[in-house]
Image (cartoon, rainbow, N blue to C red):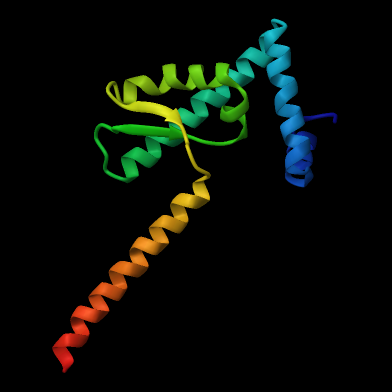
Length: 131
């Protein structure tokens, strides 16, 4: 790779495993004192905090009670989780900042089931009005 555009192209075409391997190298470099790796990791934490702030704002939440983290890096890099907790703490001083217990897809399935059962209940209630 000769320039940042080459890296962007590589990222778009690389498998999840190859990207994961690259992420691991950044954390190894940080552990050995590499200043550039330290900056990359801090920048990644800042970006995740910014994304979290946007989501919280869009949802109209003033003080989150829970901030749940998920993904490969937070699962395998406890130091990164601690960094995220430090950066996220001002957003919800009393919030529980923790790792997800289940995969995010489980939440999507649960929401779909709840919405489906709500619709079924409403349809059943409305059906009574027609008979």
